[in-house]
Image (cartoon, rainbow, N blue to C red; front, side):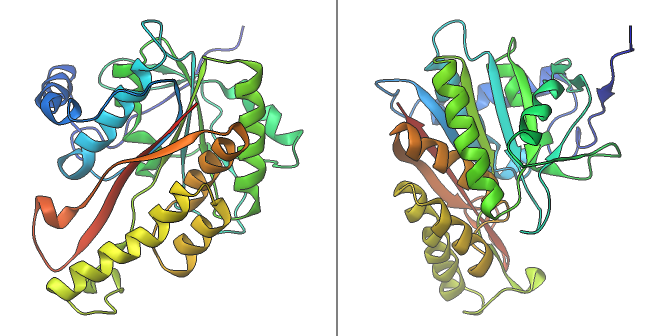
Length: 288
């Protein structure tokens, strides 16, 4: 039998804690914040969460993850489709061929056999064999292990273009075939604003903060309207999201399934650590 392969954690100790004890303590410290979110009446089929270092946006990603996982009952979801980005529109979907992804909480079981389903949808993926070199999925893996320890993960990076909508339709079909088993997770931060990012149309200070807030909203509002094409446009043209394709795939699946979107929270890195640069963070849920 072929030997199983494990993708190593590269960002532990930098973007999130490096030990099980520290991760569990961090998550526990966010309990009050997580408790401020009202539980859904039904099941959450998808979420959009931020992917900055946990110091900045971990509490928001974790709270959305926990809310969604609990909506599946005690058993939790069987499959998490965790989608990231940091890709250009012409890029193929990026998939991973390993059997496990290392985390400080233990290995997360991956589902590499599902990559074959993309080929059948004319979404021929590129299998990423080298170092991860990307935070969009890795920072979510400890949360996946914490909130859905028995679930397998289908990990994909999605470009901001038509492939995202095709993937969203495929995922909606999979959810219809396996009700109460699949949770979609899109990982994206919003506007990266400030001189260090080369994007500061309104300068710095309060005017810059207001511009960033409104620019974030140019992505959040079409997400709430389940308009994935407008989300992609806002992400690419307005620089309002760094991984718009992943979020658009979830929104397209939600649109097909008739899900109800909800904004859980929206803030920025300036609310955590004021300065001349800021990044927007939002979490949304989609309930069926």
